[in-house]
Image (cartoon, rainbow, N blue to C red; front, top):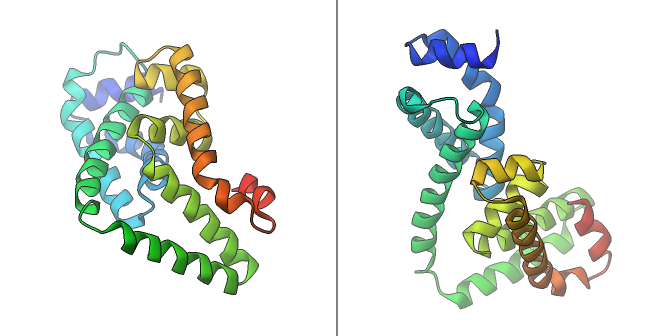
Length: 195
C-alpha cells in the first residue's frame, strides 16, 4: 500500500496502517537518535516518544511535505529537547573531571584489541560531535551519519540548500579542529576517516 494512503488511513484511526508506518521508519528514527545520543536505551525511548507525538499530531498533517520529512522534524525536535536537558545536567560536571575521563578512555583504547580501538575512536568522534552547537550536530548527523541528500536536509530543516552547504562546511571544520590532536597519533587520520 502506498505511503500516502497509509497516512490517510492512520489519520482516520486505522492502527494497523500506523503500525506499518512505524515499521517503515522506526529503524531510521532510532539511528538518528543513536547518532546524537550514543545511548541505546535513550534512543529507543526517544523513538517511541517520536511515534507517540506523530500519532497524536497526524490530524494536523496536511501532505504539504512527505510524511518522512514531517516525521524527521518531529524526531529532531524531540532529540533537541533531550540534548538540551542533558547539556544542562552536564554543566554540573567539572571540566577537569571530563578531561580525566577523556584521558582514561584514550589509555584504555591503547590497551585493547584493534576492533575495540576502532570503536572507541568512533565514540570519540561522537563525543566531539556532541560538543558542537546543536545546528551543526544535526546537519552532520543527517548528512554524514544518515546519508541524507542536501535536498532532503533542506526540506527537513526548512533551510536553503546553500545554508545546508555552509553549515555542513563549518560543522566539518569545527569537528576536524577538535579531532586534530587525536589525528596526529599513530594511524590516526586513516582510521578516523573510516569511522
